[in-house]
Amino acid sequence: MQHVDGNALAGPLAEFFSFDMTTATARCNGCGAIGELARAMVYRSGAGTVVRCSACDHVLATLVETADRAWIGLSGISAIEVRRG
Amino acid sequence: MSEATAQTTAPAAASAAAVLAVPRSGWHVATVASTRRETPNAARIELEVDGWPGNAAGQHLDVRLTAPDGYTATRSYSIASSGTGTHVTLAVDKLPDGEVSPYLVDEVRAGDMLEVHGPLGAFFVWAPDAAAAGDPAADATRDTRPVQLIAGGSGVVPLFAMAAAHDAAEDPTPFRLLYSVRSPDDVYFADALRRLAAASASLQLDLVYTRRAPEGWPSPPARITRDVLEAAVIPAAERPRVFVCGSTGFVERVADWLVELGHDARSIRTERYGGT
Ligand SMILES: Cc1cc2nc3c(=O)[nH]c(=O)nc-3n(C[C@H](O)[C@H](O)[C@H](O)COP(=O)(O)OP(=O)(O)OC[C@H]3O[C@@H](n4cnc5c(N)ncnc54)[C@H](O)[C@@H]3O)c2cc1C
Ligand SMILES: [Zn+2]
Image (cartoon, rainbow over all chains, first blue to last red; front, top):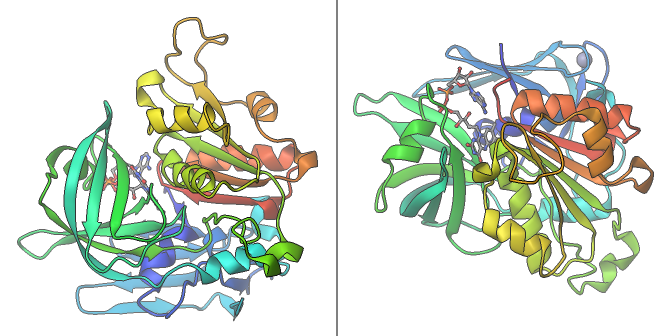
């Protein structure tokens, strides 16, 4: 299945967060790797979007968007850090 | 890929400033100002976007198309322009069996309206050096490392925005672009790139032709190899910041080779467009 990367999450995540989340760093709770969300791997299908750790392939997050709601699960992320500049 | 395992360190102040300068995103109604053939397979689309807050070089937007029955399709497109103002330039490559790109390339006309969400993304972004722009406070933290841009096909769009912004700002950072295209006819922004690479010398441009090279070109057409990459990018020893953009397969091949060639994974930023 072809994929893109976390840059493509900027639009969908803007529904949930008030600032750009793709530069936030997340810790994978599969392998402990820390990296910007922009560096994660993103698999999209009609059913939704799966975000995977690019180091160990662990599922970091899942997004589902329909006409009237947007849902995000963050089960694979143990911490998120945003920098205040 | 190894780049992902990189531990994060505090980003250079210059990139933090760039992030802060990135405007907030929102949905906007865009009116198509004009469209034209960019290459035999791609169109350049000029948009006038109501309420657009301006954008940094390298950002993208999401286009949402809605069918009469309510079905929607959303796709991301990099922005070839940057700065303040409500004018936005896109360049779209047509995938023959694609849902959205054939419409954008062949059907969209001046006066049409599109729903766009943006500007988006603060990671794959380059901003002029604040110190060079006259902010003395930024002097101490100045990031003077050279910048290497590497594009495959339509992946040149955000990198062209960076090269143009770099030129417009008269930023002193050395800039080099390695650009892989099928043939001489497939070069996006050909005139502007030639100008950036010639007159002002603000950009060093290296083209690689994969299917057909110009008459008299020193090497036969071929895909980028690790050796070509090594010869045409700023050496790892100079610690360049590297931006790579194109199809997913292209980006991953190039990024892996860069790491093998000694480039620091943390200095490589990638944007995958999809495909293999
Ligand atoms: C952040 C971001 C920025 C982008 N910027 C640009 C841009 O500036 N210009 C541009 O032309 N495109 C850009 N793209 C790609 C764009 O979003 C669409 O994926 C592309 O236009 C195809 O959409 P489609 O609906 O026509 O094809 P789809 O119906 O989505 O796909 C049709 C077929 O093509 C394959 N495919 C999908 N994408 C690609 C690809 N990139 N290369 C090869 N095969 C593919 C699919 O697997 C499928 O088999 C960008 C993508 C991202 C994530
Ligand atoms: Zn992991």
